[in-house]
Length: 330
Image (tube, rainbow, N blue to C red; front, side):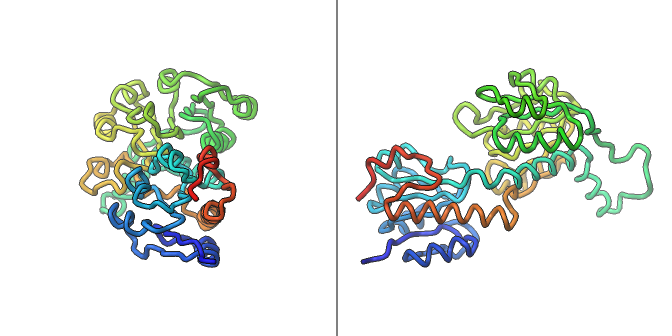
């Protein structure tokens, strides 16, 4: 019996590749940069399975070019790069890797918050640039954290983990937005659910953990930054397109808000010519929230398990569109 043929769009941790290669005829993309859209389409033309990343667009055109494709296993929690409706309509199962990134991402959110609040970027730049001449009573001033108010936009698993760290570690008061009440946050963190406008007006720190969808794309623009305190710190570890980066740059440059920390941008990578890089009150890192061995290995296991279940016609352990199960491709 022929082994399933799969395309893996990037080199993954060995824990995933070893399992995939043991069960499948695997074509693994060897380059650091992702395959082009045309190359991706060519590689999956006769494949049963695809391992995709956020950089790989899986749309109707790709699916129609790959009539044997049964499963798309996305190496990420988010799946904005996948047209799930088009997959479901064609009987293609979609999997993702939720639950295992929570602590690592919350750690990065707190790291960025601390770095931005305490002017770490400008301190490092000035130390390296020879501008650190002496101890300065008014130099490199940041914001206090203890007892301040934290606003969590999107109180899911990662939002809760971030708030837990800052509430118990720095005694922060927690406000949050969510589609519905979050009893655990209310009980364990003394948190209060509020509307976004109130959260922005009252918070000293705003950490974004919302999904990217048509209602949240561009959510943070000039009007939202204008509602925040001039001493506020803005952190985004969710998705870059939630933020109007031109408006964010203006808010940082003009003193509308104090500082920002970004793990995600739009596009990724952000061009080195972008104004945000030149602003000393903006800390940018290259989408590293899940970048620990334990987390990436856990993601890899989930990804491989989704792929292997999909090519075997079994239920995916982490199934984005279980409704596709009744119309799977033969």
